[in-house]
Length: 151
Image (cartoon, rainbow, N blue to C red; front, side):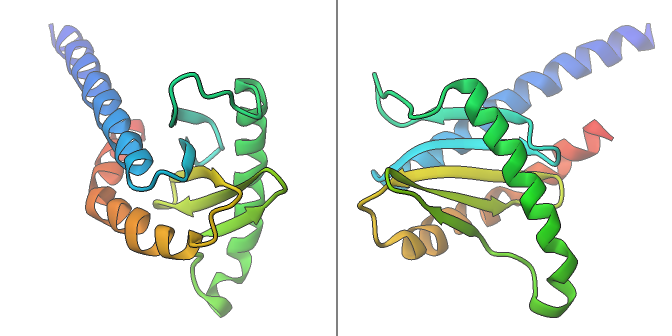
């Protein structure tokens, strides 16, 4: 009987988590019209939720390429943590490419937000620091709670 309850709790947790991740990524997308794509990854770079901004929007990368890129992004991030005791924790990392800007924002040690912005967006720091990071701070404890379930 208790196993069945655990399964029911797992289903309820998964449904709640899915709704939360969808709402969170939607909030990030809605925070600025220049944001093209948003993904939340786990500590290994596995995309656990992603959304495109525009209806009919054609992504520059395939779903598989986005996944590979996310894994590589998290691997690079993990190499940076070696220097955190000396330089502090990373607020965000931004790569500016010819066709878009790609940003990594750590949510906590287990989750990361990756997003892309239109290339012609030059106010990226203001958008990230004044719009996106406050959204993360507002919902950060939900990522901790969700992580406890995964341990």
